[in-house]
Length: 330
Ligand code: GLV
Image (tube, helix red, strand yellow):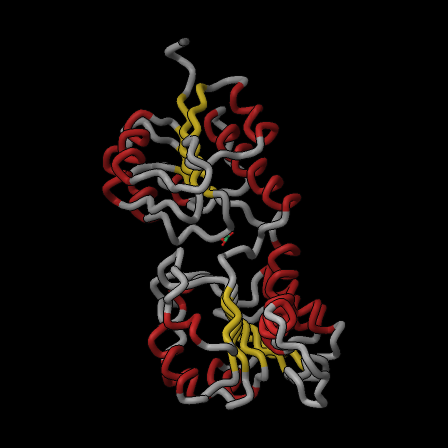
């Protein structure tokens, strides 16, 4: 092996065509167990050798991993979110952090809207009803859910995905409210979204949709008080990160009927097993973190994640760079 070739460790198996460009100039090692994350001691051992890591949301890249990574120049996370990485520690060590924005926006918005509709119209309950052989009779109020059209959607986190969800909501003649760290004038003009305070949004929305990134400021943004402010007919949808929600508070709110249901693609600690308390509610629709999971989009994400690494290792500034400060500090 040519000792001068950079060493790249990829934490999950990805389509060959997406990583082939890396093999042209680097030694590429892939964790081969398809459905199992890399154990942390193995990740630390690989990080020690690596010039680049291509990681997933299921990998925790903390101080311990980073401290051992003496040669590491770039970590490319195959996700738009990067709360699984200690970015400030990486920045201090001059390690570039990259993500995969844009390519997953529309796909994630599709899933978010599908989850909203499935929760409103009780689709999983209805599917089980038929499959389990309960459908003896048609009934006038059988599995009656809530309308989506002409209702109010309240989007918390009006970034690219939030705006794409709002665009879908316009097709359902929905009234669109949003809450965001800063005003999104483009969304206001393009889709007629109206800015609301967090509390006003909670009080007025029929569907509260969480799409904000997880940061130290947004951790447990949704507390028991937040759910209590929602209407008893409201449904809470989370397609961002479980950490934005105090799950115990959500469980209490559902037990007490403070809200009418929840659609959750994400959980505080993933994966969850089938005796997780949230799964005991018939009005909870639970998905295994599949927001961006279409074949086309996952391939596009893997390609962009590889491209980030190629750019970084070839001395170019990666397009999907998160911690620009690394360059500014030089
Ligand atoms: C997935 O959760 C992502 O952040 O892309």
